[in-house]
Image (cartoon, rainbow, N blue to C red; front, side):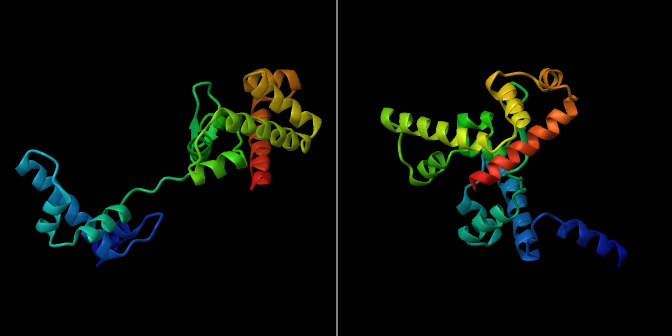
Length: 187
């Protein structure tokens, strides 16, 4: 009984709860795909897996998606310069991610599938500039100076700490707090 409870816990524990049937289907699909891959010498097709598991192709797709590992969109990722941003910033903002903000225009264009033209890019640049200026105006002098040194003058946290007379850890914490507040103001 204890072994059964341990197995159930290991099987059922995860960030998102998935039905036992869905997990079992996912296991059947994985085993069948591996077996067919070895037998056929190539990756098995969905139809071949469906025949082997007696599941409909739609059930296979749902089970595969349900059993996929979950990753947070707020997981920190790092740029080559060592600046920390969130995965969502990198995905949505593209090049703007290193600045730490996402423009409303960029989000709207991404959602509508609008393409870039010279005029649109110039308008977006102006809108981004105005929006950024408005956001920076909400900061205290010390916070504005920190952002200017980090993102406009490309200084490291250690250099900014020396300039502001605080520790590098304080710069890191303050920077994260400022960026979070600015990001929340955009929403």
